[in-house]
Length: 330
Image (cartoon, rainbow, N blue to C red; front, side, top):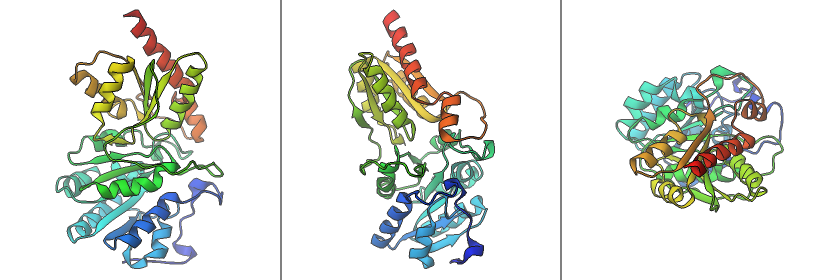
């Protein structure tokens, strides 16, 4: 396997913007998993630093493949390795590892239900690199594929657990990852159970269901609402597919308001999955979605983009008030 070393082989971790304090929690967890299971192999698409796979390449050079800027080929490599008994984790940015090689994923990984773990970084609106690097439709694409599990940890505190969760799934998994910001405080590690939502805060007046970085925004929104005497619960829906339907239905019936927040288009993502579940179960509830409103965006810092395109805590509060008002009217 290719294990090219030296400065000439490195792509700068430009996502960290020169900061040296960004912890590589996912990369370290993958290395630990690799120590426990020799079947785990790692592939990267010329993005070792930004995908934290440089750690695996150093620890297990004979189990690392540098595929280059060729995601479709990398999918084929991983599929062949999986058929040979390996458990491949392959890495690129979210938009490149889904949209660019969708047919290969469908035919070579999802259809034969191979244990290939597809790991994407830079989800949604989180990068200054602009439209070409912003994955706003990746969840919708991967949700449409039979046999595919989709996991998006709430933050650094679940990054290590996401590796274990992916390994617990007998089949293909899409991991949607956002690296922590430089210098950010890291919360205590939390588990992640595939297919189960995690109630982070109970609330009698409504429920905020979120995934990925939108979980932190939902918790902030709940604090704002609590200051007004409104008790909104918060659920971390780290597994987008299969969805925890029982939890969604029970909370809708108990609280009467459901607001879904995600760093993705409102079309085809977590909000769509929750809406489909509620309608098919015949649950009448006030409902609102917070996400990217069917548009492309510009590049910018994560906080700037989240605020400008209506994904932050104030946007969630506004959506909750709108949904609650509809409930009260009816």
